[in-house]
Amino acid sequence: MRIAFGLQYDGSPYCGWQTQVNHKTVQNELESAIAAFVGKQATAQLPIHTISAGRTDAGVHALGQVVHFDTKVEREDFSWVRGVNSFLPPSIVVNWAKPVPEEFSARFSVYEREYIYALQAGPCRSPMSHSRAGYFMLPPNLWLNVEAMKQSAKYLIGEHDFSSFRSSECQSKTPIKTIYSIEIISQQPWLYFRIRGNAFLQHMIRNIIGCFLQIGHGKQQPEWMAEVLAAQNRQIAAPTFMADGLYLTKISYPEEFAIPQPWLDNSWLPDELIGKQKK
Image (cartoon, rainbow, N blue to C red; front, side, top):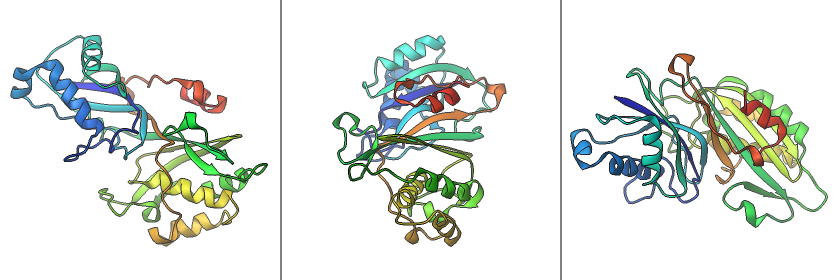
């Protein structure tokens, strides 16, 4: 049978989602925990291999990750949650589990992915947000030009070739992706970017954030974003911004699969995002 999990994790201790030789990854930790829960005999019959909705990079967090795996073991839904969590480190949690049909794929059944980037800006970073939020240093009494960033975001909406925002190590078959919406919310000293799209390239969002900050800081005009996009050349875009503030917040599937909405601790989100998350 095929089982789907909803996951949350603090990505700071890990080298990303995907299994890597001699590196600590979320996928390795989760598969080890599932194998420990189902037992050696079941694992020998059918090794545990998880497929995720998004391969988050090193240091990137998840509040709404979805994975699936195949197993011959039958358990009640909450038994999967309680049992697997007992073998996981504190930085990873299974929020829900449910059987799904064989045609369901955590990766290929997705029609929308949502990320939020949380950024603190100002003369001093907060030690309490270390590894949980991005940081951009600004002199006292100076704030970013949020309206300029919002103007530049309009150039990214729709289907485009996002090669200018693509990592050289990206394994995607095509650089053509579709961004549905970008929201930028300013609540000094915090800035939140909410980006929805069908899929994203490796480092794509962090490279977009880097360009936003160049524009918000006055080093580039809003129209520069259109030039970067049209160039299809990674060399002319801003440097990749830090991973700390990036969260995979929601994965959307067709209603027929009845995939639960992510459980979110909204205490750190502004009202504008909380309302949209609960829909």
